[in-house]
Image (tube, rainbow, N blue to C red; front, side):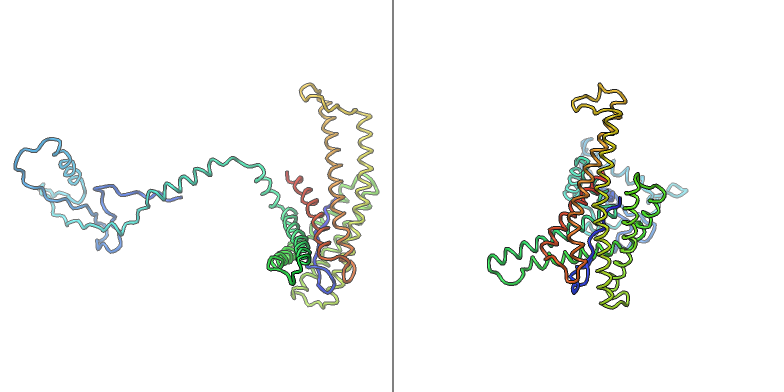
Amino acid sequence: MSEAPAAPTGVAAAGIPPLAEANIPIAKAGAAAPSAAPGAGVSAGETLTPAVPAAAPATSAAPATSAAPAAAALDEKAATPTEATTNDNVAAPTRPARSVPMSRVSIPTVPKVALTERMYAQLRRVPESKTLAHLVRFLGTWSGSDKFFMIGQYGTGLIVALLLAWQRLRARRGPSALVESLRAINGLTADARILFRIWALLPMVQWMIGLERAPPPTRNLQFIERLQALSMVVYSPMEAVAYLAMHKILPVTDAVQNWLWLYGCRLWAAYVVLDFWHIIEDHRVLRSNARALEQSRGHPGPTESEKGMSDEQRETRRLWAGLRERKNMLLTQFWVNVGYLPLTVHWSVEGGLLTEGWVGFFGTIAAFASTRLQWKATA
């Protein structure tokens, strides 16, 4: 059974709303300055070495501990390639080293690096969230994102109606800035939902083909679903044409737009009425399956432990759990139709029947019930 489509929006005159962090080395004391520093005036291929101050003449024998660092510095300098020797073992002259101002060398400050590392360390401690993963799966589906916008569309409409009623009680005139913002969200989400349904004809055609390849278990269910699929296959292009014409994309007159909205919503209302019949027939089949299961396998007691059960008893419990899940799904689908039926009748009549508050109320019922179905489908 296919899920009912989301509410379209229509022309206002018809009463239908528009459906590495980089590893930067830190220079150490006595290390060579970068050769490519801007403004240093050093030709390519040269290596800069820090200037070593001239040693003062020794007046007395220095202790061995004070002479060691100086000797190590001289040994390190002697090992640099700038002091190459000739074949006569005579030291070649070298150009004097130029010091680079430290203000031109970009070195990250240690406190900022430590703060960033602490922040990432806290993120690594966050436990894995199954709810967040489920929400990503839910919003990653076409139907899931539609239900998210559906809650935004009808929820804001209901809140606007409550705020306006509160303002009337307090004898305030004119809508507040909050009401105008909520109405803008309502119109934006309604428009986005219809835009995302432009290609809804494709899954409807796929549904019709699937019905003939794998028909439902009873002839009544097959007949109902054939009518439902046919109504949606006709409804989807009517909604798409009316929406594109409303945005001046297709050259369609306002009268034709109103006709498309009205008769398209009447097809949708027929789908909802057929879905009530589908739920009744589904429930009849479900009760028949439950009686057959009880006669063939019995009903396992709720206190039986899983360890002490045989494979046949586990299979029996699994079958009963499937029947209960199917029953809960039918109940949720019933509430979806309870919300959709008044809306489809309202949009099927020129000028409409419901106020903004009632549209938001029934739409919110349908939104939360259909969201529950999709949330379970993506578990």
